[in-house]
Image (cartoon, rainbow, N blue to C red):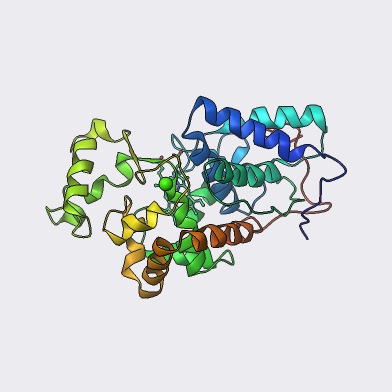
Length: 298
Ligand code: HEM
Ligand SMILES: [Ca+2]
């Protein structure tokens, strides 16, 4: 249903405008590439890639557990949308903007380029409950996370490949602090944590509530899209419990090992899995609308 050339006639400068918008957001804040990549994931996983994450309101996805005080980059999307409204009014959906933005964020941080199928339309509703139920949590088991992916037509390989998105960006201490001091009530740290990595995390996130919102990078090259994430998992230095959990499954662990050895294969497979993710539950043709402002329905 989606089409690589969907806007070729109606908005020929689309890629240029989006690339400039992502580039300028990144030049003010290098973390922005990470934050923008995550937005497309969080949009697609809750009722499909329909731009519903961008809607403002009371009980909207933005306010879900995984998004509140966490998802960022909405102003950058507003700027890109405003520039697109000037160049091609009422033409490009917010859902498609998120898909192209994610590709540009990866490309501009040294990652792969892939062609993005386009023609998504914007949904009219957004649900905080749906976000709470459908987005994976860092405290969930690999089985549960994989089940969330398979319910959307993705598979275990996609879980491993797309988790590689954690080659970019940061996590707040509260998302992994449970591993550092008293793991599942054991009085000890998570045994799956490398000891020197553990120490650096304990320094970054001391055992007191006011460290909860401090940040730690997912990998040592958090503004470069590379395969360092997989090297770290091989060394028990994955940041989130859900990252390191990939090593607890034979199939997933052998893919991790493969991507740590063959960065080119990670790049190639990442684009393939992103296109798959970008196809989840899309609205096309007469469904939904083309929002003029990504924060509100027309
Ligand atoms: C597999 C299940 C996943 C879980 C449990 C998970 C969980 C998390 C958590 C807890 C954070 C930190 C949020 C915060 O501290 O505020 C985070 C950040 C991030 N996630 Fe994931 N994630 C998953 C998959 C993905 C996927 C599929 C992508 C993209 C393809 C992705 C991209 C990112 C990025 C880039 C960041 C950093 C954002 C920033 O620095 O602003 N994640 N994720
Ligand atoms: Ca990296």
